[in-house]
Length: 467
Ligand SMILES: Cc1ncc(COP(=O)(O)O)c(C=O)c1O
Image 1 (tube, rainbow, N blue to C red):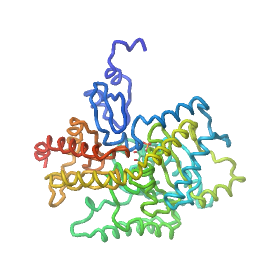
Image 2 (image 1 turned 120 degrees about the horizontal axis):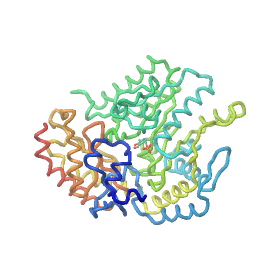
Image 3 (image 1 turned 30 degrees about the horizontal axis):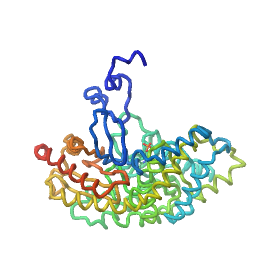
Protein backbone atom coordinates (compact mmCIF):
# COMPACT_ATOMS: atom_id res chain seq x y z
CA UNK A 1 0.00 0.00 0.00
CA UNK A 2 3.01 2.28 0.43
CA UNK A 3 2.84 3.78 -2.99
CA UNK A 4 -0.67 5.04 -2.19
CA UNK A 5 0.12 6.74 1.09
CA UNK A 6 0.07 10.25 -0.34
CA UNK A 7 -3.33 9.82 -1.98
CA UNK A 8 -6.73 10.37 -0.48
CA UNK A 9 -9.29 7.56 -0.57
CA UNK A 10 -11.21 9.53 -3.19
CA UNK A 11 -8.14 9.82 -5.41
CA UNK A 12 -7.37 6.13 -5.01
CA UNK A 13 -10.98 5.32 -5.90
CA UNK A 14 -10.76 7.38 -9.07
CA UNK A 15 -7.48 5.75 -10.00
CA UNK A 16 -8.25 2.08 -9.40
CA UNK A 17 -11.86 1.26 -8.54
CA UNK A 18 -14.06 0.23 -11.45
CA UNK A 19 -17.59 0.76 -10.07
CA UNK A 20 -20.56 -1.30 -11.26
CA UNK A 21 -23.49 0.51 -12.90
CA UNK A 22 -21.70 3.86 -12.69
CA UNK A 23 -20.88 6.59 -15.17
CA UNK A 24 -17.07 6.66 -15.36
CA UNK A 25 -17.25 10.32 -16.42
CA UNK A 26 -19.27 11.17 -13.27
CA UNK A 27 -16.97 9.16 -11.03
CA UNK A 28 -13.94 10.95 -12.43
CA UNK A 29 -15.64 14.34 -12.13
CA UNK A 30 -17.24 14.04 -8.73
CA UNK A 31 -15.37 11.19 -7.06
CA UNK A 32 -16.99 8.57 -4.86
CA UNK A 33 -19.32 8.90 -1.89
CA UNK A 34 -17.55 6.78 0.67
CA UNK A 35 -19.63 5.21 3.41
CA UNK A 36 -18.05 4.37 6.71
CA UNK A 37 -20.46 2.68 9.09
CA UNK A 38 -24.09 1.85 9.67
CA UNK A 39 -26.57 0.74 12.30
CA UNK A 40 -30.27 -0.10 12.02
CA UNK A 41 -31.64 2.09 9.22
CA UNK A 42 -28.84 4.68 9.37
CA UNK A 43 -25.68 5.04 7.31
CA UNK A 44 -22.77 7.38 7.90
CA UNK A 45 -20.22 8.59 5.39
CA UNK A 46 -16.55 9.26 6.06
CA UNK A 47 -17.31 12.95 6.65
CA UNK A 48 -19.68 12.07 9.49
CA UNK A 49 -22.88 12.89 7.58
CA UNK A 50 -25.66 10.48 8.46
CA UNK A 51 -28.47 9.29 6.24
CA UNK A 52 -31.56 7.19 6.63
CA UNK A 53 -31.00 4.41 4.13
CA UNK A 54 -34.28 4.57 2.27
CA UNK A 55 -33.01 1.93 -0.15
CA UNK A 56 -31.77 -0.74 2.28
CA UNK A 57 -28.68 -0.73 0.07
CA UNK A 58 -30.02 -2.23 -3.13
CA UNK A 59 -33.30 -3.50 -1.60
CA UNK A 60 -31.28 -6.00 0.38
CA UNK A 61 -30.51 -5.08 4.00
CA UNK A 62 -33.82 -6.44 5.28
CA UNK A 63 -32.72 -7.02 8.89
CA UNK A 64 -31.07 -3.59 9.11
CA UNK A 65 -27.39 -2.85 9.60
CA UNK A 66 -25.10 -3.97 12.38
CA UNK A 67 -27.12 -6.84 13.81
CA UNK A 68 -24.76 -8.51 16.26
CA UNK A 69 -26.54 -11.88 16.21
CA UNK A 70 -25.95 -12.19 12.48
CA UNK A 71 -22.39 -10.88 12.77
CA UNK A 72 -21.64 -13.33 15.58
CA UNK A 73 -23.02 -16.26 13.56
CA UNK A 74 -20.69 -15.27 10.71
CA UNK A 75 -17.69 -15.01 13.02
CA UNK A 76 -18.36 -18.41 14.58
CA UNK A 77 -18.82 -20.01 11.16
CA UNK A 78 -15.57 -18.46 9.93
CA UNK A 79 -13.73 -19.96 12.87
CA UNK A 80 -15.36 -23.38 12.63
CA UNK A 81 -15.23 -24.15 8.89
CA UNK A 82 -14.31 -21.15 6.79
CA UNK A 83 -14.97 -22.90 3.51
CA UNK A 84 -16.07 -26.02 1.81
CA UNK A 85 -17.58 -26.53 -1.63
CA UNK A 86 -20.60 -28.67 -2.42
CA UNK A 87 -19.22 -30.36 -5.55
CA UNK A 88 -19.48 -34.14 -5.76
CA UNK A 89 -21.88 -34.24 -2.75
CA UNK A 90 -19.40 -32.66 -0.33
CA UNK A 91 -21.51 -30.75 2.18
CA UNK A 92 -21.51 -28.67 5.34
CA UNK A 93 -24.03 -28.37 8.13
CA UNK A 94 -25.12 -24.74 7.59
CA UNK A 95 -25.80 -25.30 3.86
CA UNK A 96 -27.86 -28.42 4.60
CA UNK A 97 -29.81 -26.61 7.33
CA UNK A 98 -30.39 -23.50 5.21
CA UNK A 99 -31.73 -25.56 2.28
CA UNK A 100 -34.11 -27.28 4.71
CA UNK A 101 -35.14 -23.98 6.30
CA UNK A 102 -35.96 -22.41 2.94
CA UNK A 103 -38.04 -25.44 1.92
CA UNK A 104 -39.88 -25.24 5.28
CA UNK A 105 -40.56 -21.52 4.84
CA UNK A 106 -42.00 -22.14 1.38
CA UNK A 107 -44.17 -24.95 2.77
CA UNK A 108 -45.34 -23.13 5.89
CA UNK A 109 -45.58 -19.53 4.69
CA UNK A 110 -46.23 -19.70 0.96
CA UNK A 111 -48.29 -22.87 0.45
CA UNK A 112 -45.44 -24.01 -1.77
CA UNK A 113 -44.24 -27.30 -0.34
CA UNK A 114 -43.53 -28.41 -3.91
CA UNK A 115 -40.54 -26.00 -4.03
CA UNK A 116 -38.09 -28.19 -2.20
CA UNK A 117 -34.75 -28.48 -4.02
CA UNK A 118 -32.39 -25.62 -3.26
CA UNK A 119 -29.37 -24.75 -5.41
CA UNK A 120 -27.08 -22.10 -3.90
CA UNK A 121 -25.19 -19.33 -5.66
CA UNK A 122 -23.84 -15.94 -4.70
CA UNK A 123 -26.00 -13.33 -6.47
CA UNK A 124 -29.46 -12.74 -7.84
CA UNK A 125 -27.95 -12.68 -11.32
CA UNK A 126 -26.33 -16.08 -11.02
CA UNK A 127 -29.55 -17.48 -9.49
CA UNK A 128 -31.37 -16.41 -12.65
CA UNK A 129 -28.58 -17.72 -14.86
CA UNK A 130 -28.91 -21.04 -13.04
CA UNK A 131 -32.65 -21.02 -13.75
CA UNK A 132 -31.96 -20.14 -17.41
CA UNK A 133 -29.44 -22.96 -17.84
CA UNK A 134 -31.39 -25.57 -15.90
CA UNK A 135 -34.59 -24.92 -17.87
CA UNK A 136 -32.66 -25.69 -21.05
CA UNK A 137 -31.05 -28.75 -19.49
CA UNK A 138 -34.47 -29.97 -18.33
CA UNK A 139 -35.97 -29.65 -21.80
CA UNK A 140 -33.00 -31.37 -23.39
CA UNK A 141 -33.46 -34.26 -20.97
CA UNK A 142 -37.09 -34.45 -22.06
CA UNK A 143 -36.01 -34.53 -25.72
CA UNK A 144 -37.55 -31.12 -26.42
CA UNK A 145 -34.57 -29.66 -28.17
CA UNK A 146 -36.51 -26.68 -29.58
CA UNK A 147 -38.25 -25.63 -26.34
CA UNK A 148 -35.70 -23.10 -25.11
CA UNK A 149 -36.90 -19.51 -25.30
CA UNK A 150 -37.85 -17.39 -22.30
CA UNK A 151 -40.58 -14.81 -22.17
CA UNK A 152 -39.75 -11.84 -19.92
CA UNK A 153 -41.29 -8.38 -19.61
CA UNK A 154 -40.18 -4.91 -20.65
CA UNK A 155 -39.04 -3.14 -17.52
CA UNK A 156 -37.93 -6.40 -15.88
CA UNK A 157 -34.68 -6.53 -13.95
CA UNK A 158 -33.17 -9.97 -13.50
CA UNK A 159 -29.51 -9.06 -13.08
CA UNK A 160 -26.47 -8.51 -15.24
CA UNK A 161 -24.64 -11.76 -15.89
CA UNK A 162 -24.91 -12.80 -19.53
CA UNK A 163 -28.24 -14.64 -19.52
CA UNK A 164 -29.68 -12.42 -16.77
CA UNK A 165 -28.87 -9.34 -18.87
CA UNK A 166 -30.82 -10.87 -21.73
CA UNK A 167 -33.78 -11.52 -19.39
CA UNK A 168 -33.62 -7.94 -18.11
CA UNK A 169 -36.00 -5.77 -20.12
CA UNK A 170 -34.45 -2.32 -19.65
CA UNK A 171 -32.53 -1.17 -22.69
CA UNK A 172 -30.03 0.91 -20.70
CA UNK A 173 -28.48 -2.39 -19.54
CA UNK A 174 -28.24 -3.77 -23.08
CA UNK A 175 -26.51 -0.91 -24.87
CA UNK A 176 -23.23 -1.98 -26.48
CA UNK A 177 -23.09 -5.33 -24.67
CA UNK A 178 -24.16 -7.54 -27.61
CA UNK A 179 -26.77 -9.24 -25.51
CA UNK A 180 -27.53 -12.93 -26.10
CA UNK A 181 -29.60 -12.95 -29.25
CA UNK A 182 -33.03 -14.39 -29.95
CA UNK A 183 -33.41 -16.39 -26.72
CA UNK A 184 -35.65 -13.98 -24.82
CA UNK A 185 -38.88 -12.36 -25.94
CA UNK A 186 -39.95 -9.28 -23.99
CA UNK A 187 -43.66 -8.68 -23.75
CA UNK A 188 -45.38 -5.50 -22.52
CA UNK A 189 -44.71 -4.05 -19.12
CA UNK A 190 -47.67 -4.68 -16.77
CA UNK A 191 -47.81 -1.13 -15.38
CA UNK A 192 -51.28 0.27 -15.90
CA UNK A 193 -50.54 3.81 -14.73
CA UNK A 194 -47.99 4.45 -17.48
CA UNK A 195 -48.84 1.93 -20.19
CA UNK A 196 -52.62 1.73 -20.02
CA UNK A 197 -54.11 3.40 -23.11
CA UNK A 198 -56.35 6.45 -22.84
CA UNK A 199 -59.82 5.24 -21.82
CA UNK A 200 -58.66 1.65 -21.25
CA UNK A 201 -59.83 0.08 -17.98
CA UNK A 202 -57.40 -1.87 -15.81
CA UNK A 203 -59.27 -5.08 -16.74
CA UNK A 204 -59.00 -4.33 -20.44
CA UNK A 205 -55.30 -3.50 -20.01
CA UNK A 206 -54.77 -6.83 -18.26
CA UNK A 207 -56.63 -8.73 -21.01
CA UNK A 208 -54.60 -6.94 -23.70
CA UNK A 209 -51.36 -8.04 -22.03
CA UNK A 210 -52.52 -11.64 -21.62
CA UNK A 211 -53.65 -11.70 -25.27
CA UNK A 212 -50.22 -10.46 -26.28
CA UNK A 213 -48.60 -13.36 -24.42
CA UNK A 214 -51.03 -15.80 -26.06
CA UNK A 215 -50.09 -14.34 -29.45
CA UNK A 216 -46.39 -14.78 -28.73
CA UNK A 217 -46.97 -18.43 -27.80
CA UNK A 218 -48.97 -19.02 -30.99
CA UNK A 219 -46.44 -17.17 -33.16
CA UNK A 220 -43.38 -18.92 -31.75
CA UNK A 221 -45.11 -22.23 -31.06
CA UNK A 222 -45.51 -23.67 -27.55
CA UNK A 223 -42.80 -26.16 -28.50
CA UNK A 224 -40.31 -23.26 -28.65
CA UNK A 225 -41.18 -21.45 -25.41
CA UNK A 226 -39.58 -22.99 -22.33
CA UNK A 227 -40.31 -20.54 -19.55
CA UNK A 228 -41.87 -17.28 -18.44
CA UNK A 229 -39.92 -15.26 -15.86
CA UNK A 230 -41.47 -12.57 -13.69
CA UNK A 231 -40.79 -10.47 -10.64
CA UNK A 232 -44.08 -10.48 -8.68
CA UNK A 233 -43.67 -6.70 -8.30
CA UNK A 234 -41.05 -5.29 -10.65
CA UNK A 235 -38.41 -3.48 -8.62
CA UNK A 236 -35.83 -1.68 -10.73
CA UNK A 237 -38.52 -1.16 -13.38
CA UNK A 238 -40.19 1.21 -10.89
CA UNK A 239 -42.11 -0.78 -8.26
CA UNK A 240 -44.60 -1.89 -10.86
CA UNK A 241 -47.57 -3.78 -9.48
CA UNK A 242 -49.32 -5.91 -12.11
CA UNK A 243 -52.98 -5.21 -12.89
CA UNK A 244 -55.59 -7.20 -10.98
CA UNK A 245 -56.02 -10.66 -12.47
CA UNK A 246 -52.70 -10.69 -14.36
CA UNK A 247 -51.11 -13.66 -12.65
CA UNK A 248 -54.45 -15.44 -12.27
CA UNK A 249 -54.84 -15.38 -16.05
CA UNK A 250 -51.18 -15.97 -16.81
CA UNK A 251 -50.66 -19.14 -14.79
CA UNK A 252 -53.25 -21.39 -16.52
CA UNK A 253 -52.00 -20.14 -19.89
CA UNK A 254 -48.47 -21.26 -19.01
CA UNK A 255 -49.76 -24.61 -17.71
CA UNK A 256 -51.78 -25.26 -20.88
CA UNK A 257 -48.66 -24.73 -22.96
CA UNK A 258 -46.29 -26.63 -20.69
CA UNK A 259 -44.24 -23.47 -20.09
CA UNK A 260 -42.31 -23.33 -16.81
CA UNK A 261 -43.07 -20.40 -14.53
CA UNK A 262 -39.94 -18.86 -12.99
CA UNK A 263 -40.58 -16.29 -10.27
CA UNK A 264 -37.77 -13.90 -9.40
CA UNK A 265 -38.17 -13.18 -5.68
CA UNK A 266 -34.70 -11.66 -5.35
CA UNK A 267 -36.24 -8.47 -3.96
CA UNK A 268 -39.60 -9.69 -2.71
CA UNK A 269 -38.38 -12.80 -0.87
CA UNK A 270 -37.80 -12.67 2.89
CA UNK A 271 -40.33 -10.12 3.89
CA UNK A 272 -40.10 -6.96 1.81
CA UNK A 273 -43.80 -7.06 0.92
CA UNK A 274 -44.89 -7.87 4.46
CA UNK A 275 -45.15 -11.60 3.70
CA UNK A 276 -42.31 -14.09 3.73
CA UNK A 277 -42.66 -14.53 -0.03
CA UNK A 278 -44.68 -12.86 -2.75
CA UNK A 279 -45.69 -16.23 -4.17
CA UNK A 280 -47.64 -16.83 -0.95
CA UNK A 281 -49.13 -13.35 -0.93
CA UNK A 282 -50.16 -13.54 -4.61
CA UNK A 283 -51.10 -17.24 -4.71
CA UNK A 284 -48.46 -18.08 -7.32
CA UNK A 285 -47.43 -21.67 -8.07
CA UNK A 286 -44.08 -21.39 -9.84
CA UNK A 287 -41.82 -24.23 -10.95
CA UNK A 288 -38.66 -22.34 -10.02
CA UNK A 289 -38.06 -19.41 -7.63
CA UNK A 290 -34.90 -17.33 -7.35
CA UNK A 291 -33.83 -15.71 -4.07
CA UNK A 292 -30.92 -13.54 -2.89
CA UNK A 293 -30.73 -10.14 -1.10
CA UNK A 294 -33.00 -10.62 1.97
CA UNK A 295 -31.88 -14.23 2.33
CA UNK A 296 -28.79 -12.99 4.18
CA UNK A 297 -29.84 -9.31 4.44
CA UNK A 298 -26.63 -8.78 2.40
CA UNK A 299 -24.41 -9.72 5.35
CA UNK A 300 -22.94 -12.22 2.87
CA UNK A 301 -23.40 -12.57 -0.90
CA UNK A 302 -25.67 -15.56 -1.28
CA UNK A 303 -28.51 -16.64 -3.56
CA UNK A 304 -30.68 -19.65 -4.22
CA UNK A 305 -32.54 -21.15 -7.13
CA UNK A 306 -35.31 -23.33 -5.75
CA UNK A 307 -36.75 -26.05 -7.97
CA UNK A 308 -40.04 -27.89 -7.78
CA UNK A 309 -40.17 -31.58 -7.05
CA UNK A 310 -41.50 -32.15 -10.60
CA UNK A 311 -38.56 -30.43 -12.31
CA UNK A 312 -36.12 -32.14 -9.96
CA UNK A 313 -37.64 -35.57 -10.74
CA UNK A 314 -36.78 -35.16 -14.41
CA UNK A 315 -33.16 -34.42 -13.48
CA UNK A 316 -33.06 -37.28 -10.99
CA UNK A 317 -34.50 -39.80 -13.44
CA UNK A 318 -31.91 -38.88 -16.05
CA UNK A 319 -29.04 -38.89 -13.60
CA UNK A 320 -27.60 -42.36 -14.21
CA UNK A 321 -27.47 -41.69 -17.92
CA UNK A 322 -26.33 -38.06 -17.76
CA UNK A 323 -23.73 -38.22 -15.00
CA UNK A 324 -23.18 -35.19 -12.78
CA UNK A 325 -25.14 -31.98 -13.34
CA UNK A 326 -22.13 -29.97 -14.55
CA UNK A 327 -23.27 -26.63 -13.16
CA UNK A 328 -22.23 -24.85 -9.97
CA UNK A 329 -19.86 -22.39 -8.39
CA UNK A 330 -16.87 -22.44 -6.04
CA UNK A 331 -18.96 -20.61 -3.45
CA UNK A 332 -22.24 -22.53 -3.87
CA UNK A 333 -23.45 -23.32 -0.36
CA UNK A 334 -20.62 -21.41 1.35
CA UNK A 335 -20.77 -22.44 5.04
CA UNK A 336 -20.27 -18.88 6.30
CA UNK A 337 -22.97 -17.48 4.02
CA UNK A 338 -25.33 -20.29 4.98
CA UNK A 339 -24.73 -19.73 8.71
CA UNK A 340 -25.39 -16.03 8.18
CA UNK A 341 -28.53 -16.87 6.19
CA UNK A 342 -29.84 -19.05 9.03
CA UNK A 343 -29.11 -16.38 11.64
CA UNK A 344 -30.73 -13.72 9.44
CA UNK A 345 -33.91 -15.77 9.02
CA UNK A 346 -34.01 -16.23 12.81
CA UNK A 347 -33.65 -12.47 13.30
CA UNK A 348 -36.41 -11.69 10.76
CA UNK A 349 -38.60 -14.21 12.55
CA UNK A 350 -37.77 -13.44 16.19
CA UNK A 351 -37.97 -9.67 15.82
CA UNK A 352 -41.21 -9.91 13.86
CA UNK A 353 -39.72 -7.91 10.99
CA UNK A 354 -42.05 -9.38 8.36
CA UNK A 355 -45.05 -8.23 10.37
CA UNK A 356 -43.32 -4.89 10.92
CA UNK A 357 -42.97 -4.44 7.15
CA UNK A 358 -46.69 -5.24 6.80
CA UNK A 359 -47.43 -2.47 9.33
CA UNK A 360 -44.82 0.19 8.49
CA UNK A 361 -45.19 -0.16 4.70
CA UNK A 362 -48.82 1.00 4.51
CA UNK A 363 -48.08 3.71 7.11
CA UNK A 364 -45.20 5.05 5.02
CA UNK A 365 -47.22 4.86 1.82
CA UNK A 366 -50.19 6.65 3.36
CA UNK A 367 -48.14 9.42 4.98
CA UNK A 368 -46.07 9.95 1.85
CA UNK A 369 -49.23 10.12 -0.26
CA UNK A 370 -50.79 12.60 2.13
CA UNK A 371 -47.66 14.76 1.91
CA UNK A 372 -46.89 14.75 -1.82
CA UNK A 373 -49.75 13.33 -3.90
CA UNK A 374 -50.93 16.86 -4.77
CA UNK A 375 -47.50 17.99 -5.92
CA UNK A 376 -47.74 19.16 -9.56
CA UNK A 377 -45.02 16.75 -10.77
CA UNK A 378 -45.99 13.69 -8.70
CA UNK A 379 -48.06 11.37 -10.87
CA UNK A 380 -48.32 8.27 -8.73
CA UNK A 381 -47.29 7.16 -5.24
CA UNK A 382 -47.60 3.39 -4.97
CA UNK A 383 -46.26 0.36 -3.22
CA UNK A 384 -46.82 -2.73 -1.21
CA UNK A 385 -45.11 -3.48 2.07
CA UNK A 386 -41.76 -1.74 2.10
CA UNK A 387 -41.44 -1.51 -1.66
CA UNK A 388 -42.65 1.97 -2.44
CA UNK A 389 -42.23 4.37 -5.37
CA UNK A 390 -42.97 7.87 -6.52
CA UNK A 391 -43.42 8.40 -10.27
CA UNK A 392 -42.92 11.88 -11.68
CA UNK A 393 -44.82 13.35 -14.62
CA UNK A 394 -44.62 16.63 -16.51
CA UNK A 395 -48.41 16.91 -16.49
CA UNK A 396 -50.59 15.24 -13.89
CA UNK A 397 -53.81 15.46 -15.87
CA UNK A 398 -52.73 13.45 -18.92
CA UNK A 399 -49.73 11.74 -17.22
CA UNK A 400 -47.45 13.24 -19.84
CA UNK A 401 -43.90 12.08 -19.18
CA UNK A 402 -40.90 14.41 -18.91
CA UNK A 403 -38.54 14.68 -21.89
CA UNK A 404 -36.19 11.69 -22.01
CA UNK A 405 -33.11 13.54 -20.78
CA UNK A 406 -34.89 15.66 -18.13
CA UNK A 407 -34.46 13.00 -15.41
CA UNK A 408 -36.52 14.78 -12.72
CA UNK A 409 -36.26 11.76 -10.41
CA UNK A 410 -32.45 12.07 -10.34
CA UNK A 411 -32.76 15.69 -9.23
CA UNK A 412 -35.21 14.66 -6.52
CA UNK A 413 -32.98 11.81 -5.31
CA UNK A 414 -29.99 14.17 -5.08
CA UNK A 415 -32.01 16.82 -3.23
CA UNK A 416 -33.42 14.22 -0.85
CA UNK A 417 -29.89 12.92 -0.17
CA UNK A 418 -28.91 16.47 0.79
CA UNK A 419 -31.66 16.23 3.45
CA UNK A 420 -30.13 13.02 4.84
CA UNK A 421 -32.27 10.40 3.11
CA UNK A 422 -31.07 7.97 0.48
CA UNK A 423 -33.62 6.98 -2.14
CA UNK A 424 -32.92 5.49 -5.55
CA UNK A 425 -33.53 7.10 -8.92
CA UNK A 426 -34.41 4.12 -11.16
CA UNK A 427 -33.38 3.63 -14.80
CA UNK A 428 -36.62 2.66 -16.59
CA UNK A 429 -39.21 5.29 -15.66
CA UNK A 430 -38.99 8.63 -13.83
CA UNK A 431 -39.31 6.92 -10.49
CA UNK A 432 -37.61 7.13 -7.11
CA UNK A 433 -37.93 4.01 -4.98
CA UNK A 434 -38.11 3.81 -1.22
CA UNK A 435 -37.37 0.41 0.30
CA UNK A 436 -35.87 0.82 3.77
CA UNK A 437 -34.74 -1.98 6.07
CA UNK A 438 -37.68 -3.86 7.58
CA UNK A 439 -36.71 -2.80 11.10
CA UNK A 440 -37.79 0.81 10.68
CA UNK A 441 -40.04 2.41 13.29
CA UNK A 442 -42.95 4.84 13.07
CA UNK A 443 -40.48 7.60 13.96
CA UNK A 444 -38.30 6.57 11.01
CA UNK A 445 -41.40 6.67 8.80
CA UNK A 446 -42.04 10.28 9.79
CA UNK A 447 -38.39 11.17 9.30
CA UNK A 448 -38.40 9.64 5.80
CA UNK A 449 -41.52 11.58 4.83
CA UNK A 450 -40.16 14.82 6.29
CA UNK A 451 -36.82 14.54 4.49
CA UNK A 452 -38.40 13.44 1.21
CA UNK A 453 -40.77 16.40 1.28
CA UNK A 454 -37.93 18.82 2.10
CA UNK A 455 -35.87 17.46 -0.81
CA UNK A 456 -38.78 17.61 -3.21
CA UNK A 457 -39.64 21.17 -2.16
CA UNK A 458 -36.04 22.22 -2.76
CA UNK A 459 -36.19 21.18 -6.43
CA UNK A 460 -39.83 21.92 -7.24
CA UNK A 461 -38.93 25.13 -9.07
CA UNK A 462 -36.31 23.30 -11.10
CA UNK A 463 -38.75 20.49 -11.98
CA UNK A 464 -41.34 22.97 -13.14
CA UNK A 465 -38.81 24.49 -15.54
CA UNK A 466 -38.48 21.06 -17.16
CA UNK A 467 -42.14 20.34 -17.82
C1 LIG B 1 -35.48 -8.77 -9.11
C2 LIG B 1 -33.99 -8.90 -9.20
N1 LIG B 1 -33.45 -9.99 -9.73
C3 LIG B 1 -32.13 -10.15 -9.82
C4 LIG B 1 -31.27 -9.18 -9.37
C5 LIG B 1 -29.79 -9.35 -9.50
O1 LIG B 1 -29.21 -9.54 -8.28
P1 LIG B 1 -27.62 -9.33 -8.09
O2 LIG B 1 -27.35 -7.88 -8.24
O3 LIG B 1 -27.38 -9.88 -6.72
O4 LIG B 1 -26.94 -10.14 -9.13
C6 LIG B 1 -31.79 -8.02 -8.79
C7 LIG B 1 -30.89 -6.96 -8.26
O5 LIG B 1 -31.30 -5.87 -7.97
C8 LIG B 1 -33.18 -7.87 -8.72
O6 LIG B 1 -33.71 -6.75 -8.23
